[in-house]
Image (tube, rainbow, N blue to C red; front, side, top):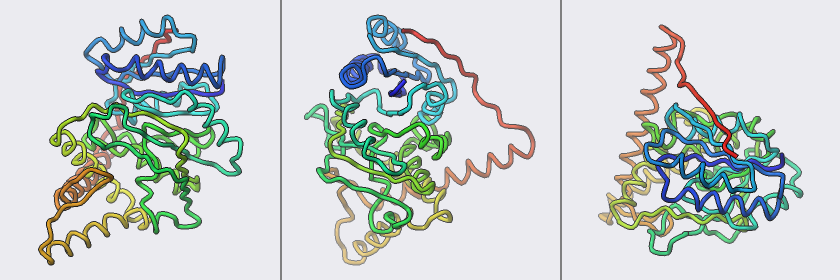
Length: 325
């Protein structure tokens, strides 16, 4: 099997079929008969399962529907990687749609690689009426690698996005699993992708952004309050990562130090404490406050796990799977 495209989902019956249709089209065009789709349902309570089963019944591409009872996108992705048969893993989200040439562009870039690479591409706004967030539209190719200390000069965390990540199986094995303490569905509700990028960087894997592997993001957020809630979760996640990586590689935490310095300068000068992330405005002091919350949550998780390990072995959630096509 050449390519395994992995999608985690929960209660997205209204949108999952469009996502899967785009994946099937990309596989059929560039890897016909040599790709598979793996969907991991992380505890849906709507009719998501039925929608996937009905859609898969007429799909020419093999579809495997898995059920993950341990909460979180990270756990779902780890389960999918254990089941996947492909030489390449592609990760996207259930509210995204792959461009028809996505697999073609992925294989073309891989053919030119001379080193292990975790690669991601452009993320365009799928619906122009949505807020301009959770996208990445830079036209410039960029690379980060630890031997050049690239994270010292630029923000590695914003290199690529989790809805548009691809790599070879052996590179994923070198990086290791997603941290199941972090990500959607957990108390640290974001940045499982950023954490994996950091793990790749520390493992000596080059992280690359290319503008021609395109995904369209239909995130559905229209209101400022919805954007603020999302960015608060991003900040909590970033705080957790600062706590996790501060003593592993200080370059990964430089963006937090820069934000603190900027906030202090703005406070002293009397400027409005407001900054832009892409085209989206957010209060810097609120961002930093949520970062502190995330750091505390992560440290509490680590302490709690250590205490539990002293008294009893960890218990993992039961998993079951079903092939539907």
